[in-house]
Length: 298
Image (cartoon, rainbow, N blue to C red; front, side, top):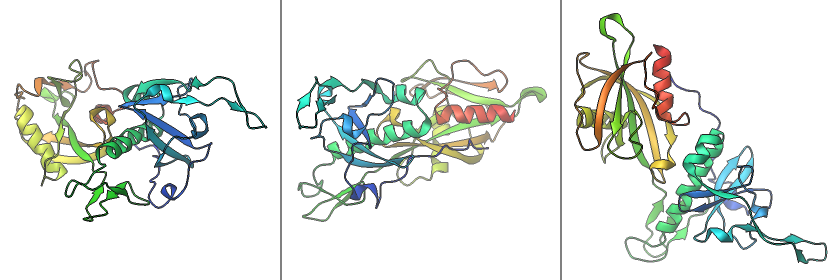
């Protein structure tokens, strides 16, 4: 079972990258891992921001082009004064809105908007950290129509690379004919109060399914039988460019009990799907989508 995905922002490749921003376009301003929002919590427009702002293309949202920029000085993201017909500027410069984390945006805004905001964080972070060729030290140049750069001297191609990670909703038959049980864990770092799913990054040379089996073995010492793909979600909380791939899985031995590794995990236990704890991942996360899907199956 999969959760039907909402419509997502479209790619910039071969489209918005060849255009210039217009005042009505969306302008996503990033400072570190925070984004600027309007007073009502939405995304500002390009025309609301300083005219000298440099923009990088993101794609479109509901047909509206979207652009991103990064500022090290959040106070610079202010509206210009109103321009009169004679060309004079009147009124004071004021802040467009307030700075908010991606986590806060994802909890309140529609999923396509949160996805676009996460892409903005990923793109501007990549542009800031990939300015020079790692082979010959020359300044990299943008590749038109792509989120990529190329070295003009040695030809090294540098695309925005993703960091794939996997997570798994692991189940076993209920005891004595009872409801299906779901394996939940508590992590040693991060949101330690939550009961979450086993998760981890994919290593070089691994398929996604192999990564699921390895992470489960390493973290809870449980062998798996079936592993089935569920869906994916860009996840800016874990860092720019992180892509989560979710799976459902069943244990090979229904009597197996989890043994935590003591490093990444501090607790692991089986819960009946009709008696899950209240401390679950947020509703906007693929982790929660997986948990809810398993619980709905019963």
